[in-house]
Length: 573
Image 1: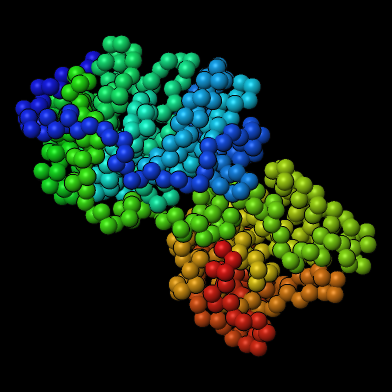
Image 2: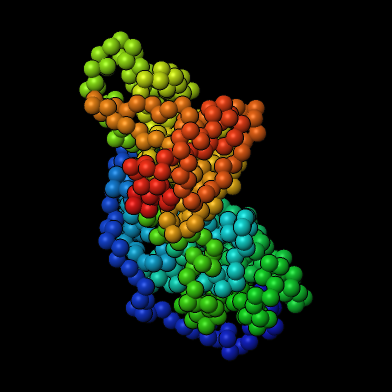
């Protein structure tokens, strides 16, 4: 089934180029990109990786075929908050534990900025797992074939193929020239938008003997003949990736051969790239793709010659990858709190884990039970409702948690922003976004100093679930911008929440309580005003009007608190 690309040489590769392709040797000592990130390869316990992935939760699966894949990849977070990717092999893979450990340790010695470096492994009983750096910005296949916001730009495509060639060159220099099933799903993007080659493909599954799981139309011809993969087979797969980069589609080499032979390069190139590159650049990339796809392995280039050829083609080298990719820079997410980071990823499971441990200072009196009121039967019953709600929340029984939290709130004796925040997430997990929005706003209103550090990301997440159109997440954490999430008003609250001697809080007056319109009433997105009002308490709208209009908060001009025009978000997120 291999394609005889030798006939393409006269039209795509001149003899001088062809000679230089084969004769560039590997020296193994010219690479200056080898890195030591301080993360030595180690062995993890199964319990550590189980906890890191929330019990191998389905919601943490990041591999392309989900839980149906024979070997599933999960995202996770270790106790030190380091994010990782965990590949869990099926129970029939790697029966020889010694061979698995030897292979993993060998690959784990590689450290390079072009690789998704292998950090460790786990080998307990029948369990075989690999641990690698987590790449948060999807795969090359996602950005090429299934892009949503913008197609990958030509300079970025050239950068991808160069970085990939550099990764292969490094692996070859370290004696790991074999890479199994190289394809667009093996190329991942880190937090800075830089492409990296997954190290999972450097390990050969000892049981099934397969090196290629994709369609046979993309398989090196010598593998079809002998069933063996060689370093030149990897170059053939690199050629198919060059076609992917050029066309934006997964084109079989046989089809590409027909287009190249007919000199129909316009049909071969991605229509989204029109006007982004010259004919010379396009032709040069086609030349090297053709050379990599030669039928005879000995006629294919080596990784070092690919690096030498692709480096001069680079464009806009001074522009960071994340800008070319149009993705948020890694430092933006790194500056967020754990809850802010979870909300930016829209990870409800992670939000639940954070809120499970999170509380507010105004709840301390409730938790410590210091008040004389707490010794009354009515107060004790209410506290029991809160405790039962917290227990159901920890067990992820969100319906039951809503029931107990509602009983606590309806009693009306004490208020708790934490309860509203917990119930907001419970509503969201129960597909009740309008109710979730109401609780998020109520929690924000009840406590107007510290809670912003956690409620703002949650409320932003709720607003998106409610089909509002909030501004970019960066505008929530930047106090210099003139607008914030539509969930919050910049007007000061009508009253402060006084503290009793027993350190519990009293409910705010009814006129300042934000209530949500009934589900039958069309939702209205609150507007944002950055000018604090000085209206008197008597100018507040009656409570009945709050059922048909967005919640609005007002404050006396002599309020002892500083007007909350910027919400004070940045110091806490």
